[in-house]
Length: 199
Length: 185
Image (cartoon, rainbow over all chains, first blue to last red; front, side, top):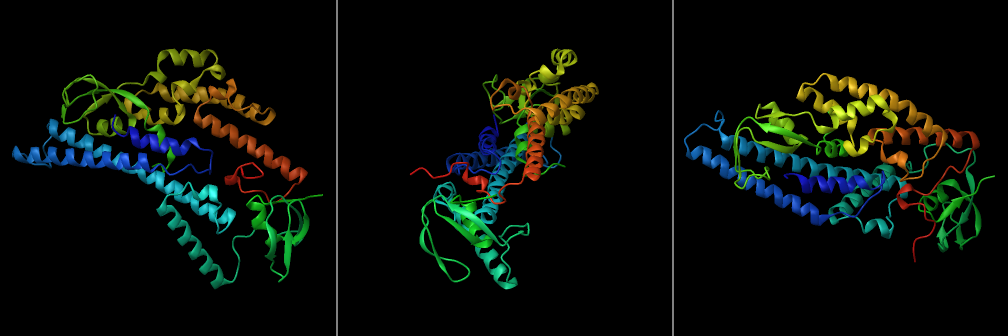
């Protein structure tokens, strides 16, 4: 049936949990594009046939007209599926920038196609240049903190010599605990390298 | 007008309906029963909703009421609405019903949807606030997509309320990275 492959692509996107990415399926994507070209060819040949019979394209309502119509509708449908696939993925990718910062972890970067990596990089550059213009870091937490410092435990060996905002360096060995400025700790927590301690 | 990029809407419009062609169409391979690429007037074909809808607007086909709104389903809903497996009949029972009703011109579908939703809604909401069903339990398998969204919204509202009352860490690992603490090394 027409449009099956395209819908399969969309379903694959929907099968993941909300806000999660699955690898870009360029194989299926290319298949849908090829299907579109096929529809286009058949549409053209049907229209040529109507013209050869000396009928007016605008008013002819014969079998060829409805055949061409079905191909046209299948094209439009395939286009919608492809657009929705790319659009919704791009939205998730832009959200990644706000959630985990300007550097993507390896396991997520593998799932992007080349154009999506480019999109992420450009979005990141645009955001950085805007933030430097207005001189505010927009990626920090939206809720004002009660205390500028938080206690964290390091979950991953991040290493030493990490520069903090007060020009000091700290050694984040695994399982060590620190009292850090919120803004410094935030990016590590969202990447899963630290956890916040409460109480 | 629904959102052009809406994933759920796209998946829903893939649902098949059976139509009868009022006009002939050539050069298309959508009728599996015909050997030639030609559809005769009066042939009965299963089409996805997106195609059937557009063709119906141009008076090329007439659409039959899909099987998920047949008499058998109606009787089951009347008997015990909460226990009917709507998911296997149509994953988007309500939205699909809303779309199909004006096309087939069946006025009773509206009442069917309303009465089914009213009685099932109460059940879902009480369960969502009291018990957590493990994924894959029988309760999940009979809900439509709309009802699952409703259930999850109710659960997350409850979780947010508890978090607000008890307090807890403000920062958490980004949800995209998953629950695991360490990456597999």
